[in-house]
Length: 230
Image 1 (cartoon, rainbow, N blue to C red):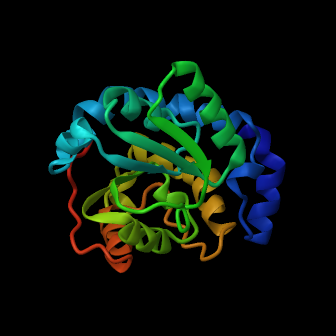
Image 2 (cartoon, one colour; image 1 turned 135 degrees about the horizontal axis):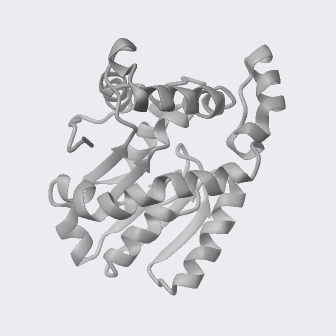
């Protein structure tokens, strides 16, 4: 983020935000390196098993969309663990999609692909699972994204929203981890959202209540915290 001091100064003055793709390229690699260890140790082991019937579907063969996939770390981890399922990673940043596609090619995985697409218009239907890994809060219109997911899922499909842990009040989040995420959010997540259509600007410490409101407004009939970090 230090590379972007000049553009962030302009954004703070204008309030127009900064699109993800307008940041220094080091951000994209840095984000992957920041989140990959957590996905490697928790995604298949804890997150997916916390969802009802999802692992069983993935073992048999399911259709999965990983929305806001970035460099595709989460997509590739799932594709390797469940070879009978098909995984498509979508991101609105073409540079990240190209990087993910090249990385997947090197792994030799045959059940994975990457395409440019936003959360509100990614193609396809009858998905068994749609996942958002640490990205829903960055989006300009997360409610619109949820509306699209509701339409894209099978009747018995599931949506997994992985978000940085946060309580619902600022006071409860003033701890070392919360302070770090508020910092990231100030210079990355909120500006990214503000640069897009609605610009809801949830930020990386939105809390469960706001995320629940977004999901319900988007058309989901059921929302539950399936698991949480310690």
